Amino acid sequence: MLLIGCSIAGHAATLIPEEASRHINENATVYGLVASANYAVQAPTAPTFLNFGKPYPDQSFTAVIFESDRPKFGTPEIAMREKQVCVTGAIFLFEGKPAMIVRDPNQLQQR
Image (cartoon, rainbow, N blue to C red; front, side):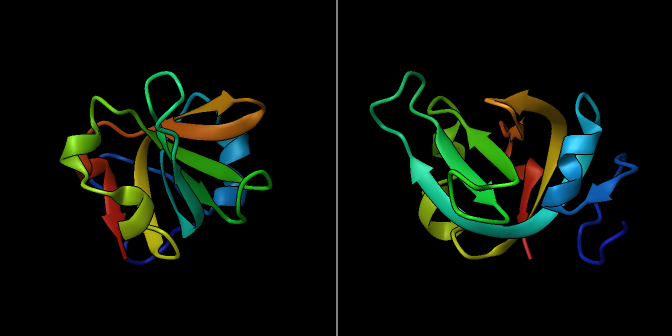
């Protein structure tokens, strides 16, 4: 499914969050609503989770920003919550659901 507004060069597929599970181990752009977001300060690597589709634990896709990369993004759990967002990178399974690690602000675009 090609979506307007998510033009990331070099990525053939633009997916809605519910399609991401069919594209594990592929590079793609996922576009959708960040339904919930959480900065897990106490967890190892203090990740920020941006949950697409539905709020955690029913999300269909998650973008993960580790604490080491967080200064590049500001406060994404606030800035991206309830926004339409494009995220680009490699999709993998995390706790049985599709996810993507985001290390560079160029991978994340608010629409």
